[in-house]
Amino acid sequence: MEAKKAVRLMILDPGHFHAGLVQSRAYDQVDSVVHIYAPDGPELESYLALIDQSNSRPDQPTHWVSKVYRGDDYLEKMLQEMPGNVMVVAGNNGRKIEYVRRAIEAGIHVLADKPMVIDPGSFGPLKDALASAEQQGLVVNDIMTERHEITSILQGALSRIPELFGELVTGSPEEPAISKESVHYFSKAVAGQPLVRPAWFFDAKQQGEGIVDVSTHLADLIMWQVFPEDPIDYQNPDDDVEVISARSWDTLLTVVQFNMVTNETTYPDYLAPQVENGSDLNVAANGEFVFRLRGVHCKVSVQWDFENPKGGDTHYSIMRGTEANLVIRQDEAQDFKPTLYLEPGEDTDLGLFGSIVNEALESLSDRYPGLSDEPSDFGWEIKIPEAYQEGHEAHFARVTQRYLQHLADGALPAWERTNLLTKYFITTRAFALSRRETD
Image (tube, rainbow, N blue to C red; front, side, top):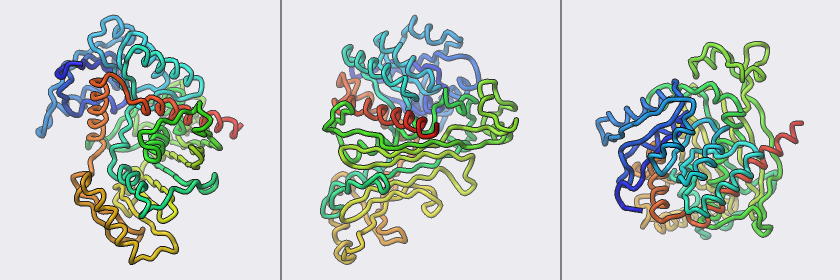
């Protein structure tokens, strides 16, 4: 690809604010004229408002020029006109596999928000679509922002220092070696403004249950941290990929709460099967599953509540080693900012451990200068310079920059292509298993 302006974006049905965050920065390779194809309505207007906000900010404004087609035949219109070569899609997850498949058939590169599929029946079409993309030399990937969170980066890096961490234990289904748990909230602010969610966000057939949505990030992080740049093929018996158990449960919202986050005064007809007692809405938002990856037992848990009056989303992640545990906490005690801790083993000489921690951080100083540590109520806290602590918006820019490099290279790395499919094998298998366990 040419180094300058070789990429021309087409944004399809931007029903989620993540579509706008892809454009939170300007990129040298990307043409400033962006073609948007979408049905008319508030979701499109929210996306355009977010682009205007990026264009008009005083600090490093963008200069996107939006060419908008509004109409119910937006997909066919995009495929007919094809003014770009990369489709960005972030919105209704129920139709996403159709969008991805049709784009690949037309020879279009794809950058898709997660999840790419939300049920077991869509896994086969995804597998076929990715095989077709590879044959055509198309670059298709999903948006994994959490790989750019500095605490996750350092958690993985420190786990590969044997003097500090020892070896990753294999764990058990009851006490996994790795656990990642996230709690999210329907009511929240984005870019300082209350987030308005579309009504379909609360329909599992369109948004997807929590067990196949946010869990995509967590399953991806486990593979990426423990087996960095190593292809894990779910079809290879030696790779030992198995979902052991899974369950899901609902979050109950009142009609007042639904109105607060959607601006809708009544439930649409497609949500009627989820309404209880004529007013409360059951949302299939929560799920957890245990799986085994090359003998290592892992657990993923996602929960959604209405709001957190004390702050924002929370997160807990632990990697258990034979010498120490590496733990990320993001809760009230951490001011809802992800914070990395080292928990020494019970028999550890604490004086000696302190020097081992210092040596481990020094070994990372060529990549991450300025790291330090100090004792805390949660073990040794890894003090990370402010410069590394980027926000959600910056992570989207980094994902996009990485994707643009893959475009320039002409392909995803082999491990990325393999693990993309394995990741969705895990989440869709968990979905299927949760259905059987609740029947």
